[in-house]
Structure formats: C-alpha cells, structure tokens
Amino acid sequence: MSKLPSCKMKILNVLLFILVTGNIIFSQSSGIDNTIPIPNNAQLAWQNAAMGVLFDYDLHVFDNKKYNQQRERISPVPDYQVFNPDKLNTDQWIQTAKAMGAKFALLTVTHETGFALYQSDVNPYCLKALKWRDGKGDIVLDFVNSCRKYGIKPGLYIGIRWNSFFGVHNFVVQGKGKFRENRQAYYNHMVEEMVKELCTRYGDLFEIWFDGGADSPERGAPDVLPIVKKYQPNALFYHNSQLAEARWGGSETGTVPYPCWGTFPYPSTDGLLYPEIVKNQFALLKHGDPDGKYWMPAMSDAPLRGFNGRHEWFWEPGDEEHIFPLANLVDMYYKSVGRNSTLILGLTPDPTGLLPPPDVKRLKEFGAEIERRFSSPIVITEGKGRKIEIKFATTTRINQVSIREGIERGQRIRKFVLEGRSGGKWAGILEGTCIGHKFIRTFPAVKVDKIRLRITDAIGEPEIKNLSIYYFISNQ
Image 1 (cartoon, helix red, strand yellow):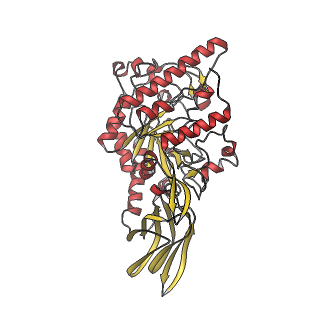
Image 2 (image 1 turned 180 degrees about the vertical axis):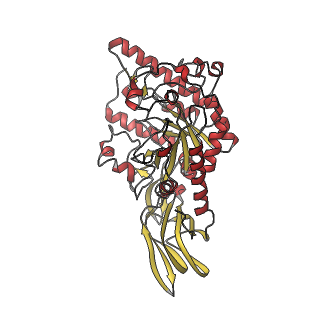
Image 3 (image 1 turned 90 degrees about the horizontal axis):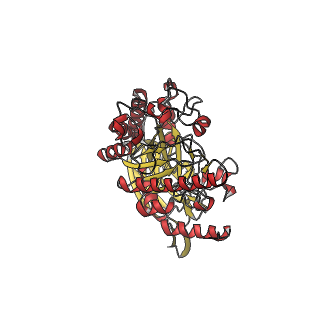
C-alpha cells in the first residue's frame, strides 16, 4: 500500500485528534465568535486531580547497583530471577500516596529492560517467567486493586521506546534486512497486544503514559492510539506523534515557569513534526501558547529522590540523602499546581516491595503541610464577569490567594490584578496573566477590609470557579 504524502497525513492526524478528543468548540461570548479550546472529560479530570504519583519498579531495582540508563537501555539483566519482592505490599504504596494528597497513581508496567509486571499472554518476558509467587504474580492487578481500595485513580506507564531484552532502541529493533524487519513486525504486534491486554483486564484507567511517547505507525512504530481509544476512552492519552492530551512541562524539576497556559499550537508534542517545540530549551512546552488551538495542559514531574544533584526514579542503595526536603516539595507544589500544571512525583519501592520508611515519612509530611496551608481559607467565593469583590467583617490579615478559572469553558482570562482596601484606599497586591485550573501565590501579609479581583483582559466572559483567601504562618 502506498503511503500518503506527509501533508495529508498531518491533516488526517489533526482530524483524528478532533474526533477522539472533541476539544475544539466555537463559543459565543460578548457577541463575538471565538474559537476557544476546552478540555475533554479525561483532561478535565486530570487537571482537577492536581497531584499524582508514579511508582517506578523494574528488574534493576534488585541488582544492588547504581542505575545507569545507558547501560540498562542496551544490556539485558543477566538473571531476571533476581526479581523477588518478598514483602510486596501495594496497599502500603497507595496509602502513602493518599497521605501525600495524590488523587491518582501510575505504575511502570514495563520500562527499559522490557520486563512486564503482569501476566502477559503475548510477552514471555514477564512475571509468568519468575519463580516468585510460582510465576503467578500480577503486580498490575495488585496495584489497581489497592488504588480502588483507597480511592485513588489507577493509571499505567508503558515503556515501548526501549527494550534491552528484545534489542529495541528508540522504537527500532536493532539488526539489518529481513532479520530486523521480521523482528520489528513481531515486536510491534506484541506491543499492540500488550496494550490491548492492559486496556481490557483491569477496569477503567485514569491515564496511560507511554514512556518517551509512543511514536506512530507511519514511522514504523506500534499503532497504539486506536487501541487505547477503543478500550479506554476515558483515560488520558500521553502521548504519541498523533496526539498528546497533556504535555511534558519541559523539565523534570516538578515545576513550570510562569505563565504556563493550558493550550498549545499543535495536536502533539513531536519535535520532529513541529521543530518549534524544541527551540529555546523547550520554551513552548514550558509556557504553552495562550492562542493555541489545542487543549493540552502541562505536567510537572520529578523523582522524590532528586535532591542535591541526584535524579533517581528507581530505588538505589544508600540514596536516602537525596530525598527532597519538605521545603523543596512545598515550593514544587506552588510552582506546579499553583501555576496551572499537574504535579507527578516519582516514588521508588525497594527490593522488598515496600516504599522505604524515609520516603513514607517525607511524603506524609508533605501532605500534612499542604493540608495545613490550604484547608482553612478565610473566605471563598466565585463569580462571572470582570470584577469580584469580597468584604470582610473586620480588618483582616491575608498573605495567600488561590484562584481557579472555569476551564470547562476554556481558558479565557489573559490579565488580572488583585487589590486590597485599607483605610478607604485601594492598593495593588499582585497581578498576573495566566490563571487556568489554579493560580496560587503568596505575598507579604497585608491588612485589608475588602479585596477585589479585576480581570483586565479576557476573551469572552471570564468565570472564576473559586477565589480563596488565606493567612498562614510559615513553618519553613
């Protein structure tokens, strides 16, 4: 079969994006027609969740060595029977995530070794091959069951870009001629069937994350998008060259710069198709585009053990000193969730199958501190239009604001200012551009008897779903 010209293929990709997401509408506002992108249900749920975790687990956790990505991508693990988490307890994982404040959790079903943490009928390199639990273990099933037990939404992380066992590097099976072509066809079919297994065996999934993307069939990669959309239509798809329902925020620091818009100019984040994406150190991924035609909110991801020069997503021996201090995690929250981004922290079960005690302790401290800072607002209100005012019963000290836009109708606000009144005079407290799902900012404490939020620039009618004012004493 002859291939379509690249320009026609791009058009088809865009049409597919619109078909499966439905996230472009025409909105009538203030008598002016505006094309305003809006989130689909999966994107809206993902943004409303605000915080999630990624549990990183693979064969090399058990070798008692420092993780070396270049080595792991090309070198099969000498003995996969080393995998033996004799105290595995996914309930403990999920209870810790819940204490942190996470609303969803993801599990690395496969990573760079290619080993699958479930009972696959198409991939022999999986838990069926182990002596552990007599070859009957299914960590994906344990994980999903624990998520549902504790009210956390489960999702899966599937690595298909690298596979040291099958000799796959950057989606391509290594080799030459028919030998490589036949093995590539086998690998692609295996991956597609694995994705079908994962999408049909474990109930509704919240997100399906392909490690480093999933490329697309027109470049010879497995064709996974139709499978996910058929069997998990409510899951957030992240991502391939055809579609990204969320975008990487441009770094693995757990933060995004301000402003960070929820819209993007392209339907995917493929830097080969759209070279503008990789320019200026991924500036477009970091900031988004207020005039972008596609709803594509940003993810801020970071490993919990990423402090002081380290950046470890998987457990390693003697690495506890690199757990982020509480103050750093709180700062991360403000610079991710507070900047219209969803925060995902990477967590590392150890060789016994448990989250280590220092990690558990820090995550519980993090959750408690966020709860302390945001659980008791002085006042909460909402409203539509260009101005919202709140009058206090008496002069009140404030030092933090959280603003949430009605993103169900799109991101409409372009500029705003928060002002406070004291002694009968109004004065500016702060100003900004992007609000989106959430804008959080602290400021030097001021005493006011009234505050007002003024929208100074917007497309269409602004809608504030939540305006919360706080005063808290920092423990940091």
